[in-house]
Image: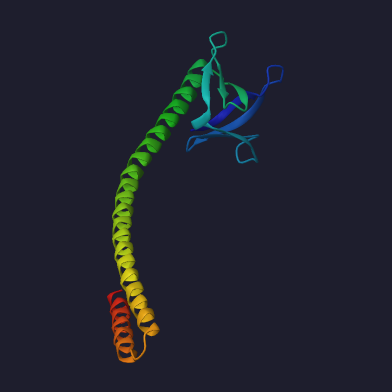
Length: 172
């Protein structure tokens, strides 16, 4: 929706005619149609207030900035308010659907990550067992090295630990 409305950004400010464009939950305004952008209101964070004392006026409040807008007629004001509220609702429904879709994706990813963590914990426990076995081989080698004439046994245990390490490498 687009068209000319009058805008006042403060209570004592005079009304200025601006060209407004309502698009994608943002209300843009320009000095004139095709002119330079003068400002915008993000409607997802703005509230609308209509005035009883002046049929043609309504107010947008973003929390940071408040602007009064005046239409040519009450009917035109009602159309703008209706379109702004519809735009806000459409955007809210879009965000809600987006979060709903992503929630399912995040749950799926979370389950995948949980399964991967379990698999990695299992592999870590297996590695800890292998480290324990290698430590026992090293202890036997050390104990035998303190004794005399144990070269053949040391070679045998060393070869067994080498085979074990090769099996671990292939296992990966």
